[in-house]
Image 1: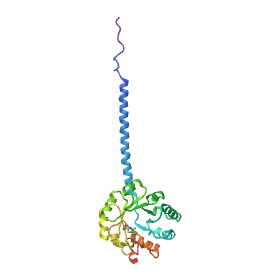
Image 2 (image 1 turned 90 degrees about the horizontal axis):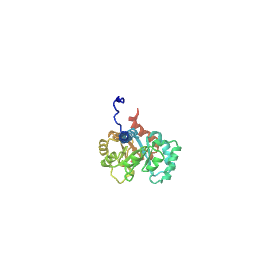
Image 3 (image 1 turned 180 degrees about the horizontal axis):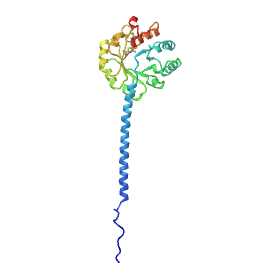
Image 4 (image 1 turned 120 degrees about the vertical axis):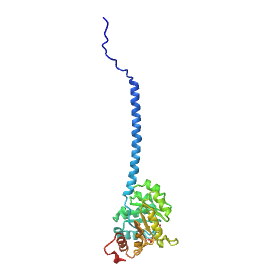
Length: 265
Ligand SMILES: Cc1nc(C(=O)O)sc1CCOP(=O)(O)O
């Protein structure tokens, strides 16, 4: 009797080696896709986060700038009485070495003056290490681009004296510019002042906050504010005043408004 074939339809031949290779290829391509994709997504996220972080930084409105002439005891005495009324205190003590700056910053901390109100002129290292609000860059400082990319915890201000410099600072991601000197200033005796029109042009051309500096008094604050500036920075108007706290209080009132500020002028 002839043998009957009971094995049924034969299974298709599977070459497990080639299926394995195929699966391996898919896995590699998939993991490459995920890696590239996640790196790209991560990069986009980081860029957006940095930008968003930049937008969330609040830029102080009323800045005062130290004179670079007082000894640390006198400076500290003034800071103690003015700090409640101002938004930012620029330590522009160019003659001090890093160690001296550290000492004075520690004294400021001990006096309960918040580091959130301190901006250090030029010394990015000290601003970063002492966790101050920010740093004010001068023409001789490292580029705004480098500082704002590397020190995202700081607000980065740039001092500018022309429209071109202001635009460049904005391009390099400065958080704000300090433009001056708007009026004649003892601090800049031999240089011509910019005037209100030049200030207004800078304010109009920029998207970032412009802080006006130079010769700003209680009497001319209104003119300055009318240009649309985001704030003002004052040196002699506060530090050389007979009563620095009263002077600071008055600037604060003129900036933020008060019921009776018309009578104050
Ligand atoms: C520190 C500083 N920078 C200026 C600039 O134009 O960049 S003007 C200035 C000093 C401003 O002092 P005062 O308020 O006494 O005029």
